[in-house]
Length: 312
Image (cartoon, rainbow, N blue to C red; front, side, top):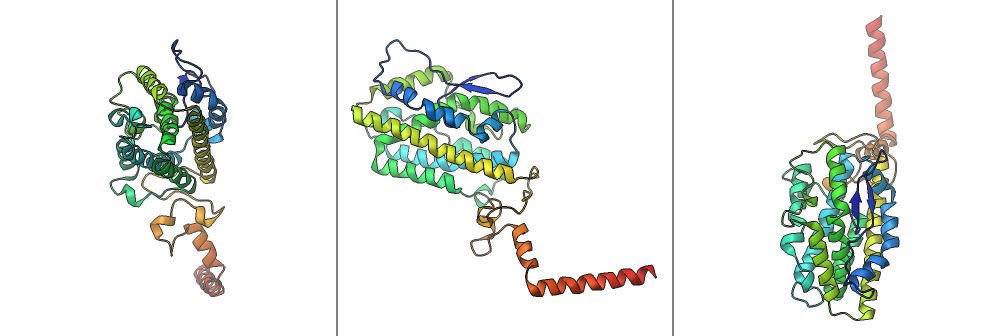
């Protein structure tokens, strides 16, 4: 989840997150790491207080919703790491290129296979909010690569901090295997000491040869990244409220028939653009057709006649 956060154990209210960076005597207020830390505090607080994150931290997360959140992460990191690879030799980003240590796409593919099976690509789609985030990442990577720093910082530093709390909550709430299936995303096998790596990353940030205006634009972009993430959270929260009961593994989630048919997330892409739709809405629409109503009436009459004959 997107924020530069350190974890602390919570009480009965669930896990808690607090914003905290290890102090460095050599850090200047004009260093990019400090500007980002101070400049995104308000966005961090808002993200932490979205309903989706608060529920998640309290263990109120359905497996189907966690799968959708993991899907959003897959599309986000696929875009981010594609643009990082594109700019790996660009001096405005190259010092922050740590593919072995940080890249998450391969780990997310493992999680997708665990949740959806080997044919996972055929079962997922990029949501509207996630697509907007992805589009922005691609734009930045191709036209304003210096701003890619903001997206990398916002994502990876959060994953190494507060993300570790979310991993524990998910394993406990969803009864996931202790062998880390389903939460590979949160496992950084090539980072032995997260705190030291974050110190290295911040030092690399501060060593970038950037002017004052550029640093301000990076902070602004980091806040924009937080907003994209909050939009994804809000989207997930709305979907979560539409889930009337936990979806069965390998089955079709229950949908209550409320809301916009086009936003029913479970069936649209699988049925194709022309025939896409939620079964509840499809049945309801058919039931309103006069010919269908006539057929139903005849069936009811026949059934009633048969029942009457049987009891005579």
